[in-house]
Every structure is written in structure tokens, then in C-alpha cells.
Image (cartoon, rainbow, N blue to C red; front, side, top):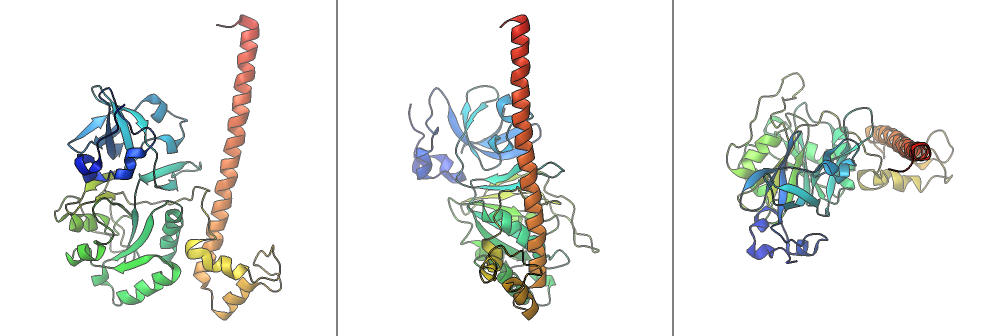
Length: 362
């Protein structure tokens, strides 16, 4: 089998393929097979880019049928190997170097890949009534385990009396994350984001409807490609102008993935709240008198002392409690699902044995 062409000589480099990707398991091609990147995901199928053109492909039932692990399905940003055909068929999914995952909307706890193989996640939040530090914290929890770098982009700085103060507020709750306050319509914004949107990198935009993701996309592209709409004055929320996730090559190099606004942002159950922006609480907990302190009414609780003295923000703490409860519920649900699947597998095997005993093997 011949390995795929080096990115230096391949059009795939334009859409994010790297030299080290040549060594990915399964990346070798033969018999007319080729590598492409998923650029759009719809209910009816996928569209991919092979570096020369964008076209529709079919996915095998093993990837899309009900009951398949959602993490095993192609997502926008994934690299896939295509087998010849009309339309070409997704034969296999190449290993991901990163993945932004959330709990899918609904009552069941099912993971959903928002974007794959991304380098930077731009968490977009408007400096109008959309501004919500607690929501930003939730996004950052999801980004923490993705393998990508978080950058918080506070848009609509022109509508805020003191954008610098808002930026400092977010910097306090997100230590280590880059925080920018911008006017998404200003061409200077592209210069501010240039260090993160560079050749060979893939950036994904996430945030609520009306936060300015599509406007930011248009500014980075230099053209009005994505539709935008006015937001409601009552709550600064907008309609879903972006209706599906899409990967767009940028003129200066690199790729950008725009996503629809997320009304529900659930944890998957795999997150760790002891790191990232909640690391301060974990550090405080090491000073508690009791190792198993629940940070309630126990004597010698360093967390409660920090709250009383104003060293720990009450909203930050309340959000930690809320996320911890949600994380526990997600893990309990996942554990119950695993037990149910094991039970169903045992019952199906028992049924199969009874049928074989009664009618004989087919």
C-alpha cells in the first residue's frame, strides 16, 4: 500500500492535514481509496473535502445506525478514508488528535462530538445581555478535556461601557485561558485572532445564538459568507443563523468550524472539575481539616472559610456545586446504561441458546 502524499505536496494541507498525520493508523491508501475531511454533517449524510473539491459521501450502516456509539460516527473535522463508488463510501475513520464533546440534548446521557481534530476552541460570548460568566465556565469545563486550547472571545465590545473590566472578570474565573474583548465587525479583530487562526490549525467557534459567531466568521473570511440576524432586545438572543456545523478554509490558512448556537450544554460524565477554572476550589480543599470534607458545616473547612472571607466568589462556588451534581447524575446514568446493555447481551445470548436447543443451529 502506498502512503498518502506528503502534505507539503498535497492539497490536503490546505484543509489541515499535517506531516505527522501520514503515520496515523489506517492512513495508507490503495485501490482508488483517498483521504478526505468531513466539512458538513447533516441528518441525511455528510459532505467532505479531499483538498480539490467538496462532495457528498455515503456512510455505512455500521457508523450511523441506531445504537452505534456516537463517538464512533464521523463528525465535522474528522479525517476519513473513502472507498470508490457513486457516491464514495466512508470506509474508515482515522484516529482523532482532539475532540470537543458534549452531552447530547435530551434526557438520556449520550455523548455528541461537536468538532474533531481542532487546535483552538473560541468560546464566544456577547458583552450585552448575553454575557454570562457561569455559562463561560461550563464551556471551559468541556474544552478542558478536548485536547484543544481555549480562547474566550467577548464580542460586542462596542456596546459595553467597560469591556476591560468584563475581560478581567473572565480572566479571574478562567486562569490560563486567553480572553479577548472585540468588536466582531471590526477588521482589526482578525489581527487579534491571528495567533490562533494560522496555517495548518483548525479553530471551532462555540457559543449561544446571537453571540456573534457568524459575524466573527465573516470577519475572518473577509466576506459575508455566513448569514447573520438581529438579536432580541429583551435577552440579546438571536435566531439560529447557522443551522449545521461546517468547516470553512480561511484565506490566510487554517480552517474554521462554525456551529449552531447551543441552547443546552450538558456534561458527558467524563469531565474533571478539579482542574482548569475550578482548580482554585480543589486547591482550597487541601487545607480542610478532614480529608473527606464535604465543604458544608464541617469544622475547619477551608472552602467555607474562603467564602466567608470573600476570597472565593459565591457564584463560582455555586456553579461548582451545580456542575458537580450534574456530573454525578451523568456518571450514574452512564453506569446504569452499561448495566442495562450487559443485561440485554446476556438475555439475548440466553434466548439464542434456547432457540438453538429447540430448533437446532442454522
